[in-house]
Length: 456
Image 1 (tube, rainbow, N blue to C red):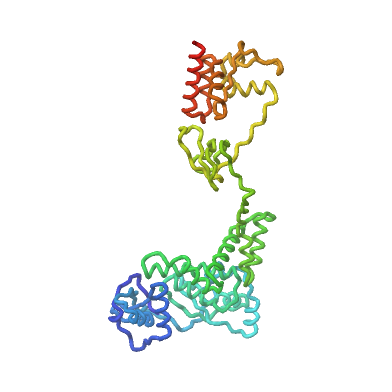
Image 2 (image 1 turned 60 degrees about the vertical axis):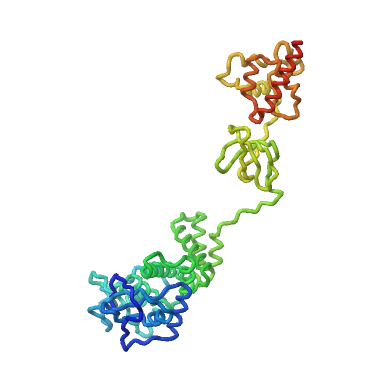
């Protein structure tokens, strides 16, 4: 095994020296070419500082066949020490790889393996790597090591291996568990490690982020045998919820969800069942009968968008999904296109049922109600019995509806004539926003005409 340096060198593949003991496998060369046509990548080619090939003969021949003039190569040197002869190492110097428990669980069922080792007394050679602190981290054979310790084994046969990088060590860890039967959860946790390996290796080859998300996940789904990339994504989502709900209080909804997911994900199949537990329910589709649509001149409240909270009047409502609206406080000629789902109808005002309520409402519309009302506010509409009526010479009519196109201009002018100048000013200040300049001009002309007629 070559010890790699952290440097890359672009080389002409035809100038790389190939040792006589290295021969390409034509079928593997064709696989490299097919992979290159799919993702544009050539697997690692490792050379010595002198330009002699160490690893990647199939990649080198493939690069030459497809006409590559320059390929990225990893410059490496032969390690000073290559340990390949198994050694007997004391149990106390060995320990389980930290990722083993993360992927396969602390309490995995090893009863079958324990029965086989008890019967034969044979434990396969472990693969471990020095951790730099005088101990050895087991990369392959973690389950055998745990069972051996349980059965009282004091030393193990170990092959020591120096890995070039962390990704290579992770690959060896996953490769050592290829043959075992795995649950959905274990496959997902393997997949998450594979994703990390794939991205780091792609980054090292290209000097940028890894392959596209879909490409990586499709590849990982095949490595862990979870079918398609979509199926793998659903399984990953279920495991993430499993982790998020792990500390939920007992008896809570999230605790029950955790228990259900744990049971389903402990099987070798059943991703769909797990995903159904976490998949958000789609919002119910609204039918044409259910959908509210405003009518012309309806008062509405804006509940979403940039005008949220404003009150508006619908001017045109002929569209299927939106209407032109006048928003209170804007110029009269300004219109806003508001979607129906961004507005709601204002609640209808309840009809007034007493003279006192009428008085209160009229004073409010004139801005004369409340603590700040002027003293004369209470005298504008004196309390009278409902059937007695008002003497118009004693009290002129104050409330004039100026917003309806159906009111004759002359009638409006006649009512205005009965107001004092102060009352006329107050009414105009409180006039509806929908009263246009044209309406107001027509009223004044009618007023002038009426005054001229009376003067004559």
